[in-house]
Image (cartoon, rainbow, N blue to C red; front, side, top):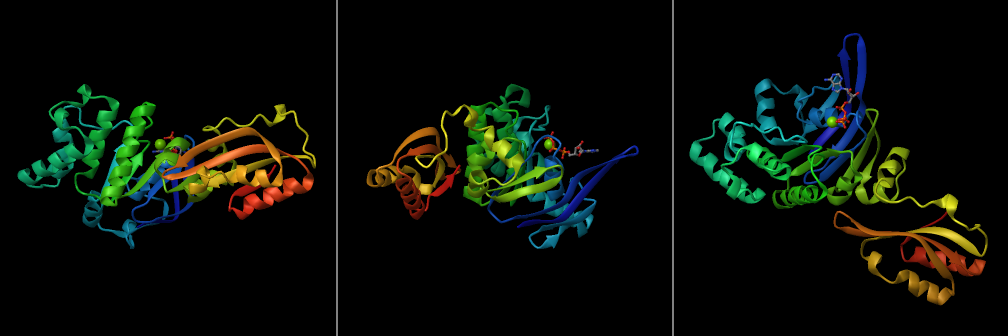
Length: 335
Ligand SMILES: Nc1ncnc2c1ncn2[C@@H]1O[C@H](COP(=O)(O)OP(=O)(O)OP(=O)(O)O)[C@@H](O)[C@H]1O
Ligand SMILES: [Mg+2]
């Protein structure tokens, strides 16, 4: 659906040159929710804006549905852009226009007949749950409601791609949740490919199928959220994940790794998360354990658990326990 090939972007201001993107390669499949996470200044917005060429890359190709859109004529590009919706952190609504007019704006601009616009705006008001606020002005709405207007406006021309630039960063946690739920619903219902950028791992964990981590204009890690989140390879990724969990205070642990006690990290994924696998196994091997840290949560729709435990017992019994856990397809790492 979307492919970025070897994208670089340099900005020049005065005699200073900044490389915002440095050799980006990315493939986003149709219908995916693809998250891009990075710290401030990493190049997220620049990257997102190259997808609809609001920002022209200095080099590289932007391929959408098999066409390099950097090669399109002005008119063809305008047409392609109409099918790429975008929402923003600060909503970017027209303050002097009502909710209805804001949503209708792209269609009015495109010269769509009035009756058709009215039907579409009605559908969108239903979708985002703003019927009763249709005649209000942006200043009369909450942040969450403003973002709903932004979403409805972005969907007005029935796009196949929705770009979200920190769409929930200005919202409180509960409102963030409701907007993320709405985005997931839109993705499911209409099959729209969603690309979102964020600096919060929480957002990635809640709705994304895939994730890319951007650092200093480069993608340092990418893949399925279930893989990247549970087995991060890059330090930056690890830091984003650590923001979500209390890291174990290993230094304060009063225990010596020995043959009779061993610290292990067990990762459960999917339905295994809720099965009594560990207790079944230790009841046979005779090992006991103490829990050092535990998390059970979800990655989008997939349950997962991460457990740090110290096994106590005979060396052979501990080894047997670890072996048995592995045969149940659990990921076991001796620390
Ligand atoms: N128009 C511009 N002119 C010059 N430099 C720019 C311009 N836009 C962005 N940059 C620089 O490019 C780099 C990447 O910026 P970008 O806005 O893409 O980062 P970001 O990851 O979106 O950051 P944030 O999380 O703060 O929004 C930064 O060093 C920034 O200063
Ligand atoms: Mg940005």
